[in-house]
Image (cartoon, rainbow, N blue to C red; front, side):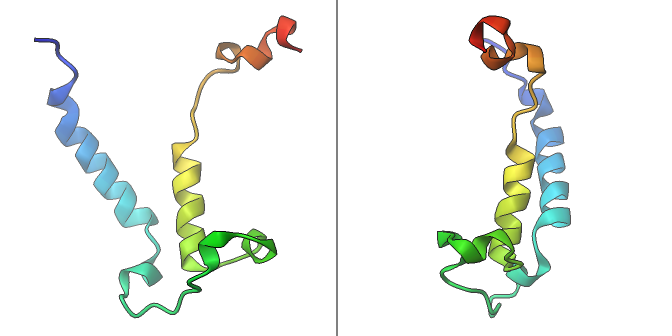
Length: 81
């Protein structure tokens, strides 16, 4: 059977757990948080919003950005310009 790195699962789970503890907005841990139910729909108010839902979405998006070297993308190739 192929080894897909299951031995690293505990380290990955610990890393994710620590990141969540550090980055998840404290306001959202409160079930009675006063948050805009429409916040996630965007619009003009989205850009400068400090709504906890928006803060959390931005943190997740920043964390999930692919970190590929520039040479690995097609746009960096002279023929693609």
